Image (tube, rainbow, N blue to C red; front, side, top):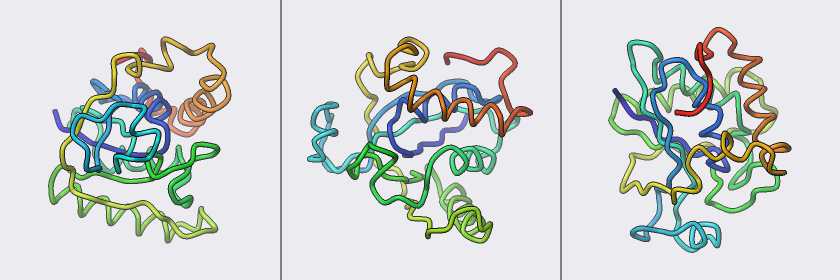
Length: 181
């Protein structure tokens, strides 16, 4: 197993998308990239920790590559909005790839260049690449959030469209039994 850690707005959205990707064994919502040890959700939301909401993805590289994970990452959020995804505003919602090694760091830089050259986005890509530092799992009630709270308003209007977009764009990469992991 390898790990990928991605910030792309609200971690509920990122977690829900990647739970459906073939080769992903587990997705955990958490926090990284800041200066406060053991941050709590309220602190992160207040923007006082420097941490991003992230999804930490455990995956089998024999089934899905880091590059394929980044392809999904760029297709399911807006990498051109600084410290924002939709109505979620603040540096905790930033677009950032937290590399676990030099190989991931270089792959992330290449993926950003390819995304910029693709012409898909009209504005410049603001996604940052950093080496991962201390990572903190989010509180238990944030884990598997979409699957356990799918009727909640935010899930209906923000998370579900991202999951549906993933399922449409990446039909061939869908888990045979999609859902919680």
